[in-house]
Image 1 (spheres, rainbow, N blue to C red):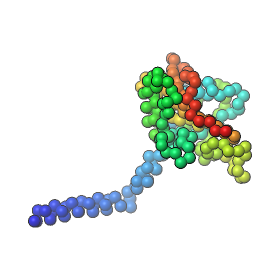
Image 2 (cartoon, helix red, strand yellow):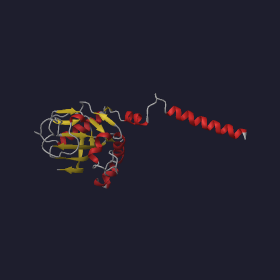
Image 3 (cartoon, helix red, strand yellow):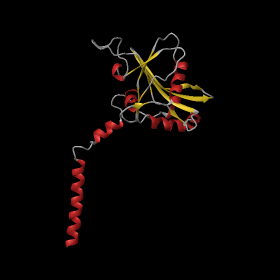
Length: 218
């Protein structure tokens, strides 16, 4: 009976040591580790900025004034755009394949997969977007009204900006010849969001039209 008692003692001792280690005040909790994994890092992908710049040139009209762009991109900041309130059936980095043709789904399969990987993280845009026609500013999410527009005026005392653009991180194929970008636009009286595909020819990114319109709110 002694060997069994010793084995039981060793098992219990190991369990108690493990529990004690898990509760050590110097160790980060699961919530702390999750929060640390959500710290936004600088977005430093030159090709990603080239795709965002190509979107501005292709889709933003002249005379629309300075463009306000949300500085943060990634999973934490896409959720309110790609999911309806209370809906968690799809992750925020999901691409709705049904609105692309079978041919495009096959052609962009690798880029779509990379899009999901890139947008599982949070990033901070830098001033690396280039537009020949429009000035733009990067504004933190804390300075922007969240979600869809519900009226023409801010709440009393609220100076947050109502009209702005939200980008995703860009997904690429392994040759960096194809790209996927999600863009949401919020206006005072509504907004919309779409998924855009791009092909690169030389150094120029060209949009594949039409885009996949995900949703429109008015």
